[in-house]
Image (cartoon, rainbow, N blue to C red; front, side):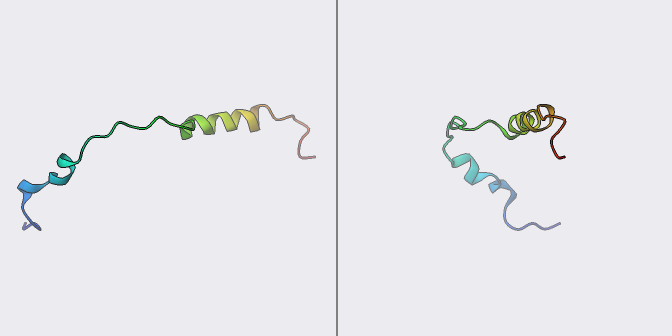
Length: 51
């Protein structure tokens, strides 16, 4: 099957890009944030709400 361009040049730009260190996160990761919201909204909710 013919390809668009040379296979030997695959990944050229990515390998030339300088490696940057990841920035420290300002907010909790989404999984942790969702868990905290669940605990706050569902587990700590009083049973009389919504009446």
